[in-house]
Each structure stands twice: as C-alpha cells, then as structure tokens.
Image (cartoon, rainbow, N blue to C red; front, side):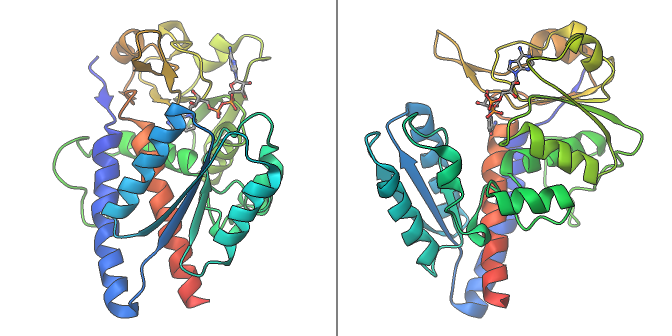
Length: 302
Ligand code: NAD
C-alpha cells in the first residue's frame, strides 16, 4: 500500500496565504494588525530555531512581532515582568512563552500569568478548563494542527499539490473511529484527547505506564504519537489502513531530525502518515498564527 503523505508544510502554507489576505483586509478596515509576542528564556538551540521560525511566519502573515530574550539565569520576577508588559500592551494579541523553560523556573506558575485572552498556545488553566468543557477560546496549537492533518487524511484532497478548495478543509467524520493518543502531556496528549472527543471519536490514551501498549495501538484507526522517543512506533503497533500522525521531534546523533514513528516500517501499511520534519511542526506554527488572529478579532469586537 502506498500511503497518503500528509504534507504539513504545504497545508500550513495554505493557511498562511488565507490568513495574509484576511490580515490585509482587516488592516484596510481598521488600520490595525495582529501582534504576536514571543518570549524565549535561555539559549536552547532548538527553542531558538522555533522562535525565529514563528517570528518569520508572523511577519509573512502581516503581523507585528514582539520578540524578547532573557538569559537562562533570569529570575521568576524577570520573566513575570516581561509577561505583564505583554499583557498590558494593546498592540499584542498573542503571547507565547517558549517551552521548555530552564529547570530553575516554575513553568506552570509562569504560564498562569499570561492573560487568558492572549494565551496563544492555549495553556492557561482557564483555557484548558474551557477546552475540557468543550468551548475553548484558544486551543493548543499542536493538537489543533494534528486535527487538521487528520481532516486532510480523510479528505480526497491531494496533499502537497495545488490550493485548498475555497471552502477550506472539510471536517472528516470521526464517529465510530478509534483514536489512540500516545503521551499525556498538557502541551499535546491531554488537549488532543479533548479535541478528538469533541469530534465524536472514541479515544484511548496510552503512556509510559500502560500495559500492552502495542496491542492497544494496533486497534487504532487514528494513531497519534506524542512521546519524544525516536522510532518507538514500529509496524507491529499499527493496524493496516490506519492514519498515523507523528508529533515527536527527536534529534539523532548525526544531527538529523526524526519522529516517534519508524516511518519506513510503518508507511507501507497505513492509509496516511505525517513525515518528520514537515508534518505536524509547520502546522503548529500555522495554528499559532490562527489563534493570534482570532484573539485580535475578539479584541476589536469586545
Ligand atoms: P512530554 O515529555 O511532556 O510527554 C511525553 C509523554 O510521553 C508523557 O506523557 C509520557 O508518559 C509518554 N511516554 C514517555 N515514554 C513513553 C513510552 N516509552 N511509551 C509510551 N509513552 C511514553 O513531551 P511533549 O511535550 O508532549 O512532546 C512530545 C514530543 O512531541 C517531543 O518529541 C516533542 O519535541 C514533540 N513536540 C512536537 C511539536 C510539534 O510542533 N511538532 C510540538 C510539541 C511537542
């Protein structure tokens, strides 16, 4: 079987192009543009790369960007002061605190300081609570990106070619589908479960303490891996004809990037699969832009 390769690079470009037009139109009407602020603490090279990418895409979308760096030695108060300034700045509609933070800083306490209306990654407890209730203001970017990739898998749209149809990506029917999510982090695994439930999928979460994990994964129509272990998922974990979404980003010793899924072993048996890189990663960035734009719209209609 030759799988449908879910080209996240292409799909994210489609979102970006549409968003750019909407930003131009709002600017003409209102004379204002969305503002995205990103705070990076420390010198982690991967985080530095992600932050630069996010700012570049935001600029391409026509946003105003506000980038701030703090050294790894920054205190709680230093980080809190920047977040407070971002909260109070009316030109900023989306705030992203790049994770992970240096180990000395309490991640959750700092995320709690972000204004929930500007919480572009949807990680504030207020937004996580609304998500559990089924009416979130802002949904976490990576899970949101995964859902669009599932929709792409279920559509008859050729991935990587031409433009999305005018009405956008059709929402696939997930009723009667069994989705298995590997990983239970607040960033990916847990919110993903909520989004899949909202769409009527039957959902199972598996994690590091799950027994018979392979067997459970093998019953999935949709298998999403968000672990951080290179090639954990091999062909024995995947049902023939499944949709496989690989969130993992792992750097190998030779410097190359790979996912949690053994792509070469799994691709021949599945219906659709995301590559790493070029699958979930670009969609995460695209969703950050969508969230910021939606916060911008909410701020002007408030
Ligand atoms: P995390 O470390 O917070 O969570 C990992 C989860 O995997 C945990 O819930 C743990 O229980 C589970 N786990 C660990 N070992 C396991 C095993 N052997 N079997 C089954 N489950 C196991 O990580 P995270 O923040 O959720 O990120 C997961 C991966 O996704 C990482 O590689 C990260 O870099 C990547 N990521 C990618 C994007 C993107 O945009 N593509 C965004 C966020 C995270």
